[in-house]
Length: 77
Image (cartoon, rainbow, N blue to C red):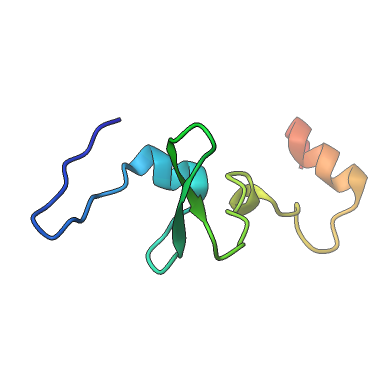
């Protein structure tokens, strides 16, 4: 992925890279030079990006028994 450097020396980190690293506004990043001479972008704030499944986690509801859940699933309720 390529991006353009502005007159101020700024670049926009492409969205797929931000998503991969979990970079959001306010995230701290670091540029490191690797042994092979390449430059690596890394998060330095140590927060793990939220799993894409995290917001889907939940439960069927308070107080529902397994039998009640199965009945709902089968359309018996």
